[in-house]
Image 1 (cartoon, one colour):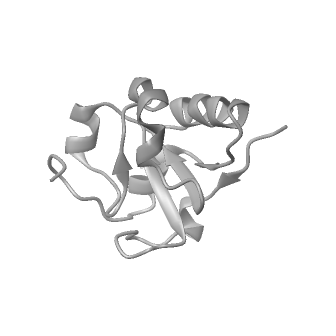
Image 2: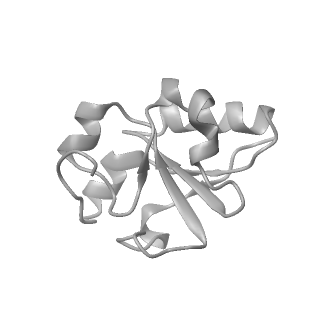
Image 3: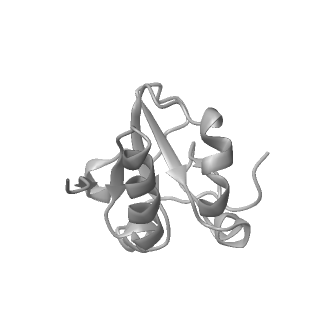
Length: 108
């Protein structure tokens, strides 16, 4: 089954108060600190299986990385364990390329 992708132009700039969707950022800590989507949840790719309980899998799941490669890998894993999600096409490269705002710095 093909993994659905969503364009950054179809998404809001900020997910802080969005209770219908979760943006999961699977990049490494240094990438996150350089700029991330407001309101995103940060769990590095290799940590996702051990931290699945931190992700609200009852709402729409959108996954982002730098350019989509890692997003597709984690979405294949999630599909394998029974969850669905969508890939933010082009990742943070596309997000920033479209002039979307980013938050800089470590997570709270």
